[in-house]
Length: 283
Image 1 (cartoon, rainbow, N blue to C red):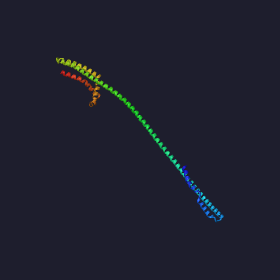
Image 2: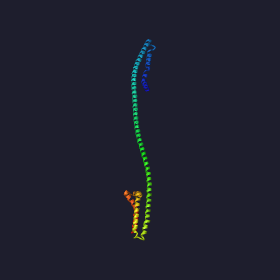
Image 3: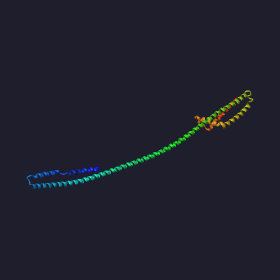
Image 4: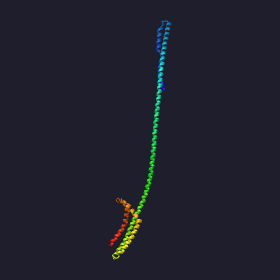
């Protein structure tokens, strides 16, 4: 509105200037009247001349006023036209500015909606990833817990196995010591006794003693077989299998038949040795 008032004032400035009275024409008529009305002329003629001059001056002033009025009206119409055009341009500019502002606000709203949609999508993806990671963590925690329980159970089983291995080793060692004592007892009692008997009557008593030794060996063999099948064989087989599996060469041969054969040889070998000693002494 202030811009419109300034435009109106600028357009009305020439009108205000043209409305001022023309003092040059009135001064020239006064000079002419003073020149005609000299003291030696007639007063009526002078007055008539003065009236004509005033009339002509009034007509010229009227004509000039009419021209000025027409010019002012034309100028006012042009000014009104310019003011209308300026008002139209101002309205158009204001409408364009409002339209630009509306478009800017619409673009900003669309951008905000797009950013909001992107953020919502990223938030949903982050929530899904968080759920997936949480599920994996829970699964891993359950697996770790189960593995820890299995490790504890394996440790307990290992401890129990170690205790059992120690017991078996002790029993095998005790069995071997007992068996050696038993063989030593046979040698001390029977073999030495047989040697003592053979010295004085080597040929006469050999048959009876051989029969006696054979009988004792049969009893020993039955006792050994019973002991072998009942107690020693299983423990000795476990020990032999464990020792064979420790060696890379014999590990492939550590099956049931070979282990049984080796354990049987370990038990039978001392008896065979005693029998060989006995037969060599008889010869």
